[in-house]
Every structure is written in structure tokens, then in C-alpha cells.
Length: 485
Image (cartoon, rainbow, N blue to C red; front, top):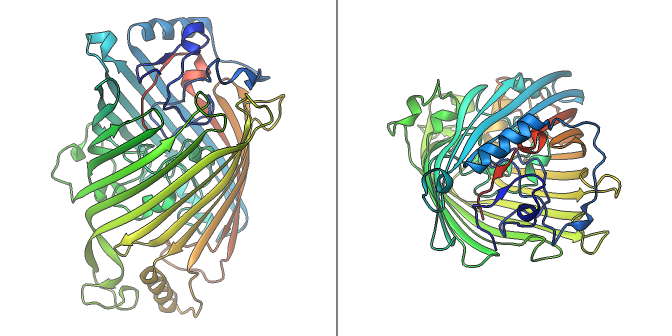
């Protein structure tokens, strides 16, 4: 078993034969832009001989950059990052038709402090990202949550992570402390989610809608503790300061005014237990986890004002409520492979997020999907993905939207649930470069972000192309691995 000091240097023989026992169950180089680590480790010689050679159209790996990356890696310095460009359009349904462009970029550095300063098991992670473009034009669909997967709080520059990562007790305990984000792959996440451009990335949407924490593109002060009793099991928990104001405000430079503790309005405390295997210890890798979130921050009641009246009908200030809890379950497993000892195959996955206290916007949320990694032997690093997500709205949210429609002179009833489905194909055209055409269908677009509700908007179609460039595999530079579960 290797630990989280594993370093991947492209095609280096001895190192390529190693594999962290905590890697995701999808082979490298799945472009996981939700995690600061960038990409998982490459498949090991013990588990992935059959992955085959991908017929690339081009390569951006040039010798000076590859050599410089290896030199820096040998001295404990690793650059990471990505760029995701997405062009999308709404050709039918929704509230308007048109097209729009968005870009999501991240760049960071990981420092192996054992190599740099002889501190065993220690690392420093820094990552900044930026969302740009006219993402809110995705409102053409009429859905506040169904038009772009990495929709952030705002366009602009954000610090995603600045942490100290410490392995202790023979790599059984891992402490991560500093500026980070529990929804950036740490809790209620899967490496599969960000394979879908339109609405699912990092975590199920319910976790984002119902929590005080902002989008996963930003961060706040927090600490995560991860304990691994065995190579296949883990228990982790953490605490973050809840800063709801970040949902509508930028960092305004770095470090920014939110780096103090004066804007904290509570604590965000997630806990998760799980079981996860990979190709070194399971021919059909699987992952199961159960989690619970306690959010102490104040939030606005979906329906009532401070006088206990319907706010859409009577106006006023929203009633302030405090404290929400949420239970979540996740499962994913490879269920079929064309080659007994290969890594190509079909993966099923599902998730459920259930509100257990409080009146948040979504009562329950469900995700289910299929992911076929390497659908063709001749193209083993392509993929086909299908996913569906249903949001069942809280009764007060439904009541509030019905009253909003009545206030606008409509007699329609607001749908009690919203469902989105996406089908895509990932074309791996170069090392670290994916072209992903996709199509999405939405039932009952919610129109939550609109001042004026348009009746009879029952469906919407969105189609587009996402170009995902992961810097480490694209330029052939090494990656410093980390343990997350």
C-alpha cells in the first residue's frame, strides 16, 4: 500500500506501477475539475494492462515542459490546474432561445513539504479559480439549477484552497486545515459528477441549494479530519465557518475581506463514513457512503415574512430561521466489463439527499446515472454518460411559488418537482483534453431566480459542447496525489 505521498511522473516505470489505495474507481485521466488535486493516479500495472492505447489527434506534451515539470516534482513542487470552456444553447422550450459561452479555469500549486523541508507527511495546497462568461444567460432554460454545472456565485477570481495537509500515525489519520470547501470533493462527492457539463458537478445540487455554504468554486476557513481504519474504509468529519454572504459577493482580491471571522454566521459540520475499492483490490470497484450535515447558520424562510404572512402576497422581510440538517447516501459500482482484468466497463451510480430538519428550498433530491468508461476497445479513454436528477421542492417553497404566480395574475400551480436529464459523449482527443458534446432535457423549469414568473413553461432543451483541459496530463507534468477517502 502506498500513501498520499505518491507521486506520478508520467510513464516512469516503478512509480507507474504504484497506486494509492484511496484512488477513485475510475481510471486516469478522468478530468475531475471538481477537486484541487486535478486527476487521479494512472492505473497500475497490476490492474490495468488492458486499458489499451488511445488514438490521440494531437499532443501538447513538449520536452522542455515535461522536463521542467519532472525537475520541479523531484524538488517537491507540483503545478496543477484546468480550463473548461463551454458553449451552449437553448433551441427549444424554456423562456427564451439563444446561445451563451462560459469558462471555468483553475491554477494551483502543491508543495511536498517532506522533500522541501523534511517534514514527514506534510503538504501545502494552493488553488485559485475563475468563472467567466455569461453563465446567467443559462436562464434561457428557465431553470435556476439546470444550465451549467460549475455555476458559481459570481464571475471573477476566487481562492479555492489554501491548506496544510498532514498525514499522521502511519497514514491512518489525515488533517487538512486552512481555506477550503467541503463541497469541492471532500463530502457528498464523486469523481463521476463533473463528467456532466449541464447541471451536476462536485456534489448533488441539493447540497448546494439547501446549505449556507457558497458554491464549490470558493472557500472559507475550515478543518477536515480523515481516519482510515483500513485501506477500504474511512470516517471523516470537519467544521467550516458558514459565510452566506459569499453567495452574492466576490472575494474582492486576495486574501479579501472574507478572510476574517467577522462575517461568519454559523458553522457547517459534515460527517461521512464510507467504503471504497479500486482496481488493485477489486475487479469491480465500488464506493458506498453515508453522510450527515449540520448547518447552524441562519436562513430565510421560503414562504413567511416576520409577521407569519405569505411574503409573495404581503411583502415584508423574510422570517429568519436557524439550523438545518441533511442526510445523504451515495453508491457507485462497476457492474460489467468487456475484459476480466481491464478497466473499461459500465458503472452505475446514485445518490439521495434528504432534509431531516429545517425548511430549505428542496425537501429531497435524487441522482441516478450510468457511466460507460471506454465504450469502444479502439478508444479506451472515451466515455458515454447519462444522468438524471430530481429535486422535490419543500411544501413552503411550493406554496410561495403558487402565491408568486397568483400575485402576477396567473392561476397556474407551480410544479412540486423539477427533473433534469443529460446524455453526453466524452471524446479524449489528446492527453488531458476532452471534447464533450451533450444534450439536456428539463421538466418543470423552476424559474426561481426570475422576478416575473412565466406560466406554462413545462420543458426546456439545452445542447452544447464542453472542452476540458487538465494541465497535468495535457502537458505531461507530475501530480502530487492526496488522500480524500
